[in-house]
Length: 426
Image (cartoon, rainbow, N blue to C red; front, side, top):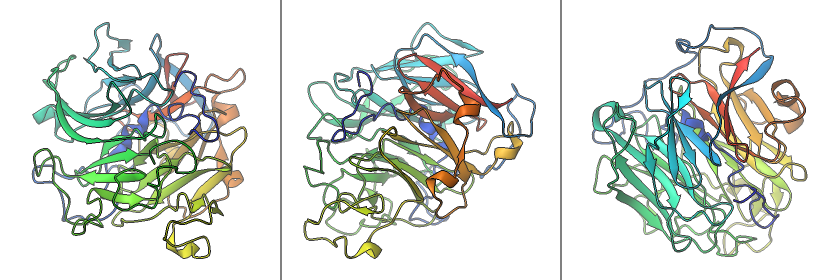
């Protein structure tokens, strides 16, 4: 991740793509499993839509935006998250540290330090999420590349919920081999249904060289969904699309190249996925709550264009109805790594409630459109970039992620500058 550079065959900026990881705005029934299904001891998260404002803001109308710096001096921040109801922000650094932003200052002692492999541009500590019942059980989950290779691990740690440091004892939840050092995915988040969602890329290299995109037996090129409360280390939600088959039972949706960042709408459970492209297209996909099993087409399709005529025995480009097309997409060029952002459900920016945000690592763009939209041309989305981040751009070439705090307010991270900003109405 050294400069978040990615060639067209390498996801260009896994990390430049998403820091704040959208704290993943609440999980989502997002897909299979209706409202009656949930983990054995994990209650569903309450819907939120323009909830009470954060204590640090006065609700304000308008769509003219600005970046307010809230943290600096960080080392390659790639994500941020907050436990439910907690005013602290936990900032993920690619090298393996998690820092605490508390009462306006970054604490000198790390909350947790994990030994990771961060030698590649897209490796390291990539994701963090807190259990919906963190205030009671102190459980948190991380997504990282383990030392000595490219193997990806999802692990559980614990902490006294009010403490600013975590316990060092790790419980491995899930591991998977990964052929190359890029396309690792990176997001881990709880859905509104209480299940844990995990993003894994196609294994890296170019052209889906490992053949995982359309391989139902592989966990790669998927977003997985597991129940960490119903088994040891987890169980399979019965409504997962392949729960009763010989295929990868953890699969929730598939056919993805590198879903570095996804977010879940805390209000209704819709799952928004930024899938980084290779040759021509960056795409933003959605899985509406209550559905699952969608095939987003990689490598048969890149966005809505045919990518390869060799479909490995699956439906080819002549059968586009077999695949789900993006809600919006942008041709690559200046754009290099799409970042899915949250659907805004906070109380500070009253005119932006219900809009889904997305951006790009290379250009530093920030855009939005109404989250109820089923399809929209890229140029028809609202471009906030010049307003939010006028020249000289703070995010261009280093926009590593969106994120949200416990109040639903939106943040963005600048990778090399080591800074975290909050989006506010001017």
